[in-house]
Image 1 (cartoon, rainbow, N blue to C red):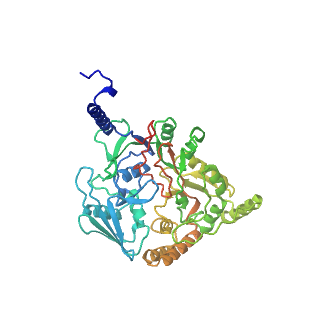
Image 2: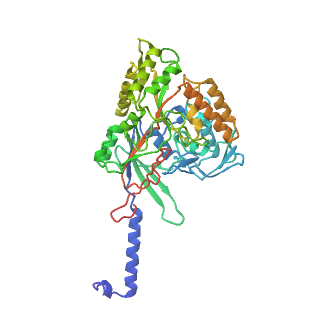
Image 3: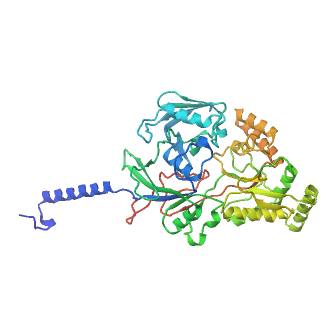
Length: 500
C-alpha cells in the first residue's frame, strides 16, 4: 500500500531495488546506442572499393579503401607511425636480413580464417615480374616470402632494409584475397546511408569498454567534396593535391580546417624526349634555370613549402645535409639577359613548342601559366599536352613511401624513364646489394648527382597534400607519409563533452 508514497519515504530495501533497476535500464540503453558515424569524402572519381595493386597505380579513393578494408602485415596509425596490422608482432634478425611476422587470429570478410600461406601468396603476387604495382621496385631487396607455419611468415632480404615496415604499411601492399580483405573496418551488412559506403570498426578491450567507430565514406570530384565540407555535410575531406588546392575557399573556413601534410617526395617535370631540340642535357638545364620556383611556391601559398632544385631532399636516411642553393640574382635584368643569350645559342632563330602533360585542375593551370611566363623569356611556346598525345615533359607528383633515398633516385632508372644515366643505374644496383649503410648512401648520393647532371628531373618543390578537417576530429594528424587511416578518427564529442 506504499505505492503512492514519495521515493524518500519508501522502505530502504525497495528504494535500493528501484535504483538498481534504473541503473540497469540506463546501462542497457547506453549499450544499444550506436556511435555517431563520421562522414568522409575522398577526392577522386573512382569508387571507394578494393582493387588489386598488381594492376597498376591506385587512385586516392582506392588507396583509402585498401588501407581501411584490407590492412597489410603492418599499417599506419593516425600519426603516420607503424602499428600492428595482420601481424600482431614481428622480429628482425641481428643482420637485418630476416623479418619474421606472427599473424594475429583474423578472418577474411567472408568469415574464413586467415592463413600465412594466403598472405605470403598475396605478397608474392605484388612482387612478381608481371606485377604493375608502383612500389614493386622498392621491395627489390626481397629474396623470398615464406609461410613457415599457419601463423608465421618470414621475409628474407639480400641486404638490410630498415625501411621495410613503412613500405609494407602502404596500401600497395594491403593483403587482398579474392577481392576480400581483413579490415580493420568492415562493410556494414545493411547500407542505410544512400550515396555513402557505411563501415564499422570494432575492437574488444580487456580492461575497458569495447571500441566501436562508424564511418560513412564516399568519393567525389574536388569541387563537390569541398562544397560538402563548407556546407557541413562531411567532417573530413581527404586526397587533396596542388591541382585542386585553389578551389578551397580559405576565407570561408575555420582557421584550422585546411591541414597540410609535411610530405616528402617528388614534385617536378620528367623529360620524355631523347631526340629533337629539347633532348640535350644542356637545354634541360637551361629550362630548369629559367623556372622561377619562388614565384610558383608563393602562388600555391602552402605553409613551409620551399623551392627545390634537387632530386633528393633534406632529411633522408644516411644523406649528408644538402648544399643550400644560392639565392637568385638580385639583378633580374642580368638574369634575363643570360637566359635569352643561352637560348639564342642553343636554339637559334627557330624556337620549339614545349608540350607538358599535367593533371586537370586550377593548380595545374597555375603551373602552366608559370611555365609559359618563365620559358617565354627563352622564346618558347608552352602548351598543355593533349590527352593521348605526345609530350616533352610529364609532371611527377608523388609522395615518398619511406625516407630512403633509394626511392627518389630509382624513379629515374633507365627501365622506368627514357632520359636517364646508365652509370647512375650501375650505382643503384650496387646500392641495392650494399650491406654497409654508409656505402649504400654514398652510391645513392652519387647516382643522384649523375642524374642531375643529365637533368633527368626538373625538381620544383615537395609534393603538396592537404585535407579539410572538422575540429571535432581529434584523431587527425598531418604526417610525412600523408596517410590518414580512419581508425581513431571518430572522436566526436556529444553535447555533454563525452566521446560518442
